[in-house]
Amino acid sequence: MFNLKPLNAYIYNRAAGRYVIHPVLSGEYYLMAPDVNRVFIAGSDKTGNFLSGSVIISDDAALVGERLEAMHDGSVVSSPMASSVASAYLAKARFTGKKARITVPPHCGLELWDVVSIVDIPGDISADYRVASYILKYSPAESHFYHEIGLCAP
View 1: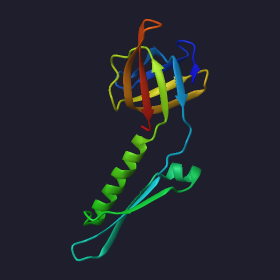
View 2 (view 1 turned 180 degrees about the horizontal axis):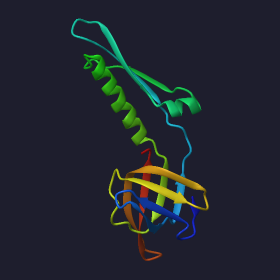
View 3 (view 1 turned 120 degrees about the vertical axis):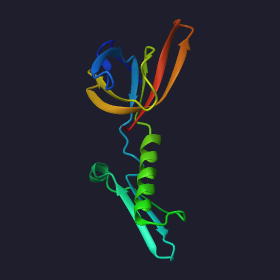
View 4 (view 1 turned 90 degrees about the horizontal axis):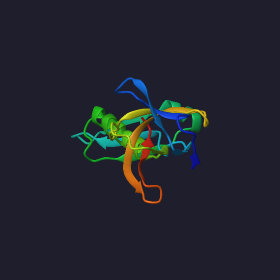
């Protein structure tokens, strides 16, 4: 965790389409690759023939290699359904992986699952994140409220 100078890091609100001067008080950025970047789903159709579907995030696979999750799902009865289930599993894996956590003054316009751009000038970080969690906290010692925001892949 590190402290940032006010107004040197700010949040870009895509819905408003403009930069909001909303300082980031502190932040932790995780540079870990996702646990899963390829999902393979196997199933069988009504006659018992094998079918499968696969989804891969090629950018991650090019950087760190394939991290495969293979599974059998008895409810999958067609190839398009297998691909759809694989996409859903991969999306869930992306959302559950933590990418960053920031602390900001209370931000009334922020909602869960919003996509925001964090621009951190001292840290030389500019990236898009999806809001995965936010908690309003109160600090009795400093007599002020703040938001702790958990961010994940967009």
